[in-house]
Image (cartoon, rainbow, N blue to C red; front, side):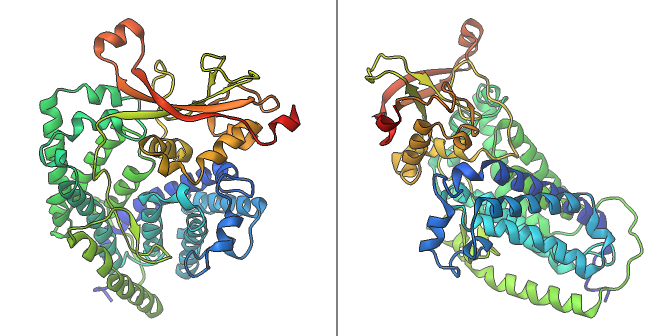
Length: 473
């Protein structure tokens, strides 16, 4: 069955599988370290409460059958262990069927997490990891050469990621068509990185070139993925370079990294192909059946891309087998940040002793330079960016966050960089204020050492006291 496989892509498959396993490992570690405060039994959006009102068919998950924090932690740690095994290449040591089952384990576990993760897991890269992870199950191991149809489907996903993002920009904010979006984006993006300040201060003509190059990469180059070699390799390489540029300019979780991973099996690596056995008939039948299903389901994202009302980052089935993607259809011109403060004063005066909570990634202290966290995902920091855009984004969870700060909840405090109050001596009151942030100029940076300048805008949440605070004190 030479028509079924492409032996020249075995190295691309190998690099792709190991890199994908690494992203799985990061995703599961993120879940292990953050779930208790976010979706645990006492979390801000508890899983038990969610599954009570959500049917299994709408959000299939192991946690629909049973939930406890210990069970969740066990599943997440199992995902870490299996991902580490795949990263080490254990699947290549197993029979073909066993290797496929091993790849199915992290997909099943992460699907279970995403489907109960609610707002904390409502990011496009979650669905992208699941869609790509499902295809990886059928990519085979060293027993067989990579199936042509699965390689095609991986290119099809990459095409939708890039082309969908390009279309949403052209249909969205006019600044993308005017080539001016990067005058603002590096400053107002969800979580700036250590180099974002410098990217923002690049000359404006270079920003225009960046936007124009982005349009070419997302609207023209994706079609070249289906061209003969070496054109397809050139297209994939250009996408990888573009994504690395984005990695340097901000913290976008593993969005850029999984796009790079998707481009790897397109590349024709100059390596000799090992001798492999022919694909067994059962494997051919399974791969063709699954591929036919995925191609049929692909109708929905294609229809969305062609629609004038294109939407970003939506799944069209509860298993996240096919999804639509896109990013930054609109770009904020002004950066707002919610600053949370607490006080031990008995009376919460405006000019009292208010102490600021410091987050790990989002801007806070104007003198603190941003750090690089991606591909690790700071979920609370990202949601705080949305909360600053509009209180409606924070409605389901912000009140619970404040309550846990008032309680000195240790799991919540672990999500922060620093709390001004020890867990056993929480504040009497917590308030939130909205500030406008802007990057300092070169001169201001030299004079003050601060990368941000912030200006008070308004009260976001008035001083709030826990319902049980009076009883504790």
